[in-house]
Structure formats: structure tokens, C-alpha cells
Image (cartoon, rainbow, N blue to C red; front, side, top):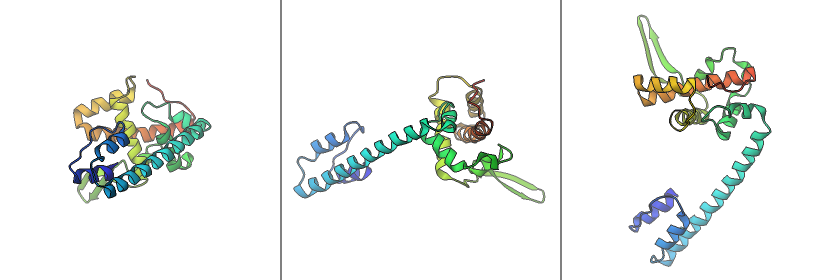
Length: 196
């Protein structure tokens, strides 16, 4: 979509929302030269093919998650969907290899960097080590939990309280780290998410 939007901007054509994208593009390019129309229409057909493939993969992931008890268990957390649950499970591999659930945050790179030398002991930004995709999905799940989920939970209250104290970005990172730890504990104990 971005490539098509960029090409259209060269001709002074801007598009609003993504709704009915292909239809809007076809309407806007009617007055352009044949060569431009052909190239943009081929990009539109490629985009349609990609979107169709993504839909097939999404449906397959939903089917796979329904047959996986661990994914179903992780999806009881508000804000955690099929993609987040499956990515977390794949990135974690074997939950039993972590003796302590709190070390999972460090494994995904959601813990602060630490610099210690003599009398100096500083904490920096997060380390960003480990699986980037999983870390990103944990951030998205934390964001959804704090903003879109209506049902109250202890985790949400804690995150909102932290947001007022430390700011939005730090609260999202902290909730994502806590989610990683909770999800690990759920997989080890074979329990569902507790709201209280």
C-alpha cells in the first residue's frame, strides 16, 4: 500500500482511509497515462494476492491454536491473541528450562541494561536482546490491555498506576515484562489467567 500511495503522490493524488483501497485507486488513476495505469494496477493485483495469502495463513493459525492447549491458555489473558500466544510459545520453546519466571523478561530483552563499576550502579534502557518479534507482540498486548480491554484486572490497575507515576512508554514496557513472566508461569503451572 505504501508503494502505491507513494507513486500516486508523484501525480498529486492522495488517498484517505484504507477502506476500499483498490476501488479508490482505480478511480483516481483514470486520467493518468496507460503505462502508469498498468504499473499501478499490477501492484494492486500483487497486493490483493498478498492479502489473500495472509487471510489463508490467519485461518490456519486459528485452526492450529484451537488444537493447542497452551495457546488457548495464554489467550485467556486480555489483549493476547492467536499470533501473540503462538509467537510467545515458539520463542520460549520449553518453559521448564527457566528455573525462575522472572528471568523470562531478560530472555526477551525487556529488562533494563545495567552498568556497574566500583561505586557506580546505573540502569539504562531495556537491553532488546532476544526475539524482537515476540518483544514487539508483548508490547502490543500490553498496550491493548491498558487501552482497549474494558474488564478490570490487577495487572491493568498496576499498569495504569505506573503510567501516572512513570509515563506511558515505561508503563507499556513494564506491563510487557510482567506479561512475559505471567505467561511463563501459566505455561509451567498449566493455569489460566487470573483477573484478581
